[in-house]
Length: 66
Ligand SMILES: Cc1cc2nc3c(=O)[nH]c(=O)nc-3n(C[C@H](O)[C@H](O)[C@H](O)COP(=O)(O)OP(=O)(O)OC[C@H]3O[C@@H](n4cnc5c(N)ncnc54)[C@H](O)[C@@H]3O)c2cc1C
Picture 1 (tube, rainbow, N blue to C red):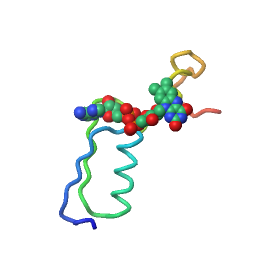
Picture 2: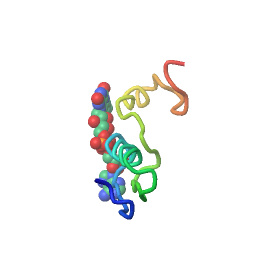
Picture 3: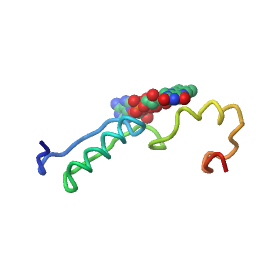
Picture 4: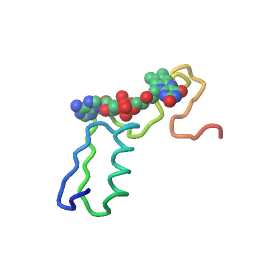
């Protein structure tokens, strides 16, 4: 049961963190949710990292396939 006065603090903003935040928001439209991450990007696809490092994906801001 979600208490509307609770403040949820999530450490990490990739798959698990953002999943937790989205689920919490669905459970409660009003509860305070804060996601703290030590990275520049949130919810990025780590699975695509080898393609970016390997220069197959040249622009990280574009979706693939185009
Ligand atoms: C090369 C590669 C290929 C992959 N391929 C696939 C695939 O094909 N299919 C698949 O299902 N999965 C794949 N994965 C795995 C998938 O990327 C991970 O399972 C997923 O990223 C895990 O997400 P997570 O949120 O649990 O953890 P993470 O992605 O590790 O995110 C945790 C985040 O929390 C941050 N953090 C940690 N501690 C703190 C703190 N104290 N304060 C603030 N921030 C903090 C970290 O910097 C990080 O940003 C791949 C992973 C890699 C590296």
